Length: 194
Image 1 (cartoon, rainbow, N blue to C red):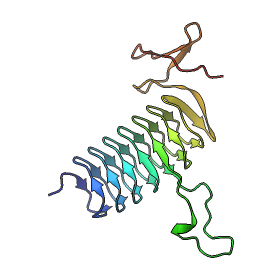
Image 2: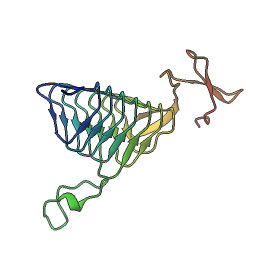
Image 3: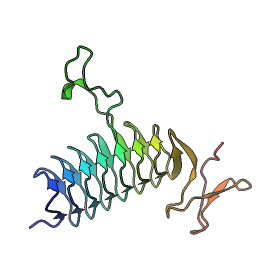
Image 4: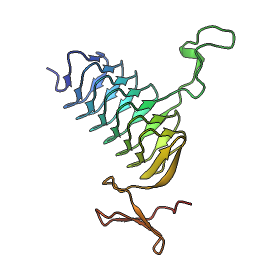
């Protein structure tokens, strides 16, 4: 008997690897050779493409699409309706009008590092890295790498500050050139935002 849960309306391919304690909810689809770690929560209508790697204790909310070429490390939060892309030059057809096939495009790898959080309705453009414990604001379109603990918002997303590992926005102290957390009383030495 499986040591994970798959809702009766969900589809988990027999060649997918699903870790202990993971829960896959209504109408989700987990494709072949996808790897889901332990204690993950995969929400309603989530699509996990073939060969995707998802770490342990990852929460993916409803209606998220995680396409081939994406790696999500441990402890990542992905808000509802987030979309990961994997093709920097998308076209349905080749220049001669023929339908593109698997050999007619190149997958761009995307990496979401440990503990990062991605807000609802964000789009993550292919080929970037989101740093550990970074925070992507809701509705952002992320077109370039995000630094560790970076806070980015907008379209295209821009760095507006940093967040503590607890999730609270850090306050910059110009006299010490440190970023401080009011909740944890921890200081970080990130560069000033100009």
